[in-house]
Image (cartoon, rainbow over all chains, first blue to last red):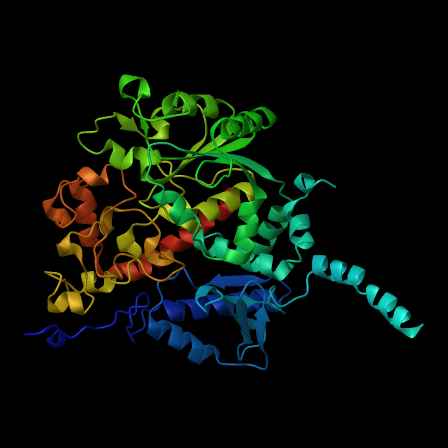
Length: 144
Length: 353
């Protein structure tokens, strides 16, 4: 028997590769329904953290299938990429924070008008308002 | 304004790092610490108000593996910035100065920041013969620790050696090595054990210290609960095989090749508290069990001396009978139970701060 006779199976790591669902996905869907109701009645933004839950591959597929895709898809480049898409239910967003090597750092379902990571933030807007007028100095210089 | 007077938020703006990048960093830390994700904007806000934190890092009886690990964490861009935001006034392996100059740096920092600095320690401290077995610049590490601890706001013991003595304290422990909390008893002490410890834990501890102004909640061994609250077994991706009774019986059998549970090969996962199963090492590449080797229990006290790494728990002297019985009895219900546990952790943390 040689080494070649020993079949090596690649171990994909977490998410036990099991296509079965654990019941967690359905529980999460109920939680999301509840959050959506809260937000629809003017309540605060809600976030469901997915990374720390022992979801099976089957659970994630079930979530993706049930939530579907909506009108918005966005990719943000800030400290590595972040992917955001709206689900088929307006107000329910899937947010995936990735490392520069496209590894998932954390992923969340955010329930609200706009995911926080997508907004332009007050501090950045202030800095940008300060920076903007310097454009006119340049324009003036070129003009004269 | 002097660079030292800037808040973290001002420093971020000065370096052109957007609030989005910062929020993303906070989301990563919050996720690793089971801080509720809805709290991230508030955490970012509070962190942005933080001012530079002086820190002194001492290496005692150690191998530098802890430092190797800590310099490899998960979100390099912002993380570097946050770590640069610590005023690390002394770290013998990283600083350029040596000899008298280096010692002067400690003295100056101690004087300027008395009562305010964080003391980070890696390595154990020998007690035998007045601590003569580990000495730097003519001072025993025992004396050095006592002197530095007096003016520290808090102490973080990095790695298993600083936490419980580690390999220095392994039988027959010729130098009488112990961990920091066996010497210093009147300061807040946090243990971040592991051989090596996980870099994300240090990031989390430091970030929460800056954001909330206090060390995180700890367990009976002074470990932050957010990272050490669950056992490796609770969060192991091979747990389903344990529940189904599918085990590897040797390192080259069918079970090993199929990635089944390593319990019978001596895995200490059921009684080891750490976050490797979810955070992994080397920026999330892998961790021991994913590489086909059982957990050796490196974040637990005296792990070197608990019989062999390859003896099953049921045969060894690890832990208590009830610990093992509980692990065996938990059974199929665990999938749901760990979800509940994670929520409970979240609630506790959000309630606390």
